[in-house]
Image (cartoon, rainbow, N blue to C red):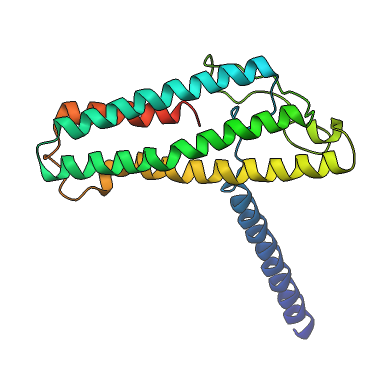
Length: 206
């Protein structure tokens, strides 16, 4: 009887250990699944001078379209929520414009420092461009050594910070409608359409 009880206790302990291992593995898998790596933007990568000009033209056009739509919202606004939404859009664009200009400056810095260009598809696809990005085996690894590499690393870090700020501002813009008090039923279809124009124009240059 004593041996039988010992055997049962051993079986129970083994089953408990196995269950714990399964749960730990499932938790680790879930954590990995909820934290995918975000693809880099085609607007933050080193490019050739002609591609940099095309990207700048695309950004400038998108900003102009968004700015025009936001000012139209201000003119068309009649209700308090519409006025609030228009002011919110204009404030977001006021914050986004210098960030876009900073990206443009940093792309020129990449060119000046000799970063290896990464081919991008300009205004043809929403998929991220293929390439090694800004890793050690990519453009930084191919740049001049010493001070050149240090400067390129600094520019890369600045580009990453700039893009993070851009994404935060875009999230503010994206959620402006839901955050506007009293928006439900108080915003006309035409103002909503202008809001979508602003949001989509900025989203296209993320």
